[in-house]
Image 1 (cartoon, protein in one colour):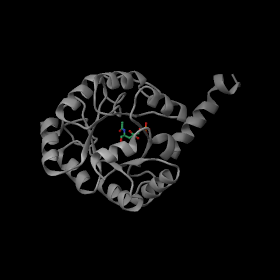
Image 2 (spheres, rainbow, N blue to C red):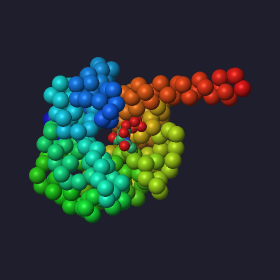
Image 3 (cartoon, rainbow, N blue to C red):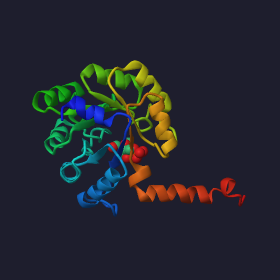
Image 4 (tube, rainbow, N blue to C red):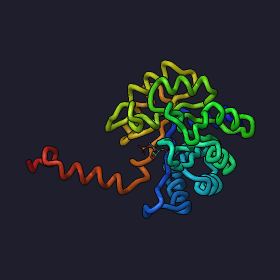
Length: 235
Ligand SMILES: CC(=O)N[C@H](C=O)[C@@H](O)[C@H](O)[C@H](O)COP(=O)(O)O
């Protein structure tokens, strides 16, 4: 499949993010692959996965398009989604179709430049590149750098971006107006209505994680709502 064919297979569809942190009960490539297979059965068009192990296993078992990341923390930067060229190359080598990287304006580990990372990946791999951004300016810069896709992933996760309970609808609108590359809606999409709304605003695809693959988060939302006296009628 060419990159253009791959991208068009994602258009208007749901991409499910299958991730668990070390220490969580669902952590491990076997369980994340089962999550991905369930997502496939439900009609997802792609999977977002973390770490070379999960990416390789999910790719081989599902055959679906995979957006790969590798969350790694460094002491000299708050960037953790595929922060350096090293993680990005490992994600590409593991078989990801799209490599997603933090493309915020924050300082990267070792003061590496995002433009240099993009150039190195371009010269060695045929993968598409997705920029995880937190505001419209970062999306504009990412398109100029040559990213193929821009996603709203990091809105609410940088000190200077909007903090919201749901998806950043304003950012989707701003990015779709400002960019010619596809804009993916990602982050805090809790319901099918919200996902449909994002697509209606011009998002190319929607990426949903916690609301589908994090049972503890889903449970907590129910529990918090039930215990909220204003809602439960017990006030
Ligand atoms: C900010 C950050 O680290 N986002 C991560 C990116 O891969 C994931 O932890 C999210 O689950 C993913 O973006 C999907 O978002 P949500 O789980 O809200 O549907």
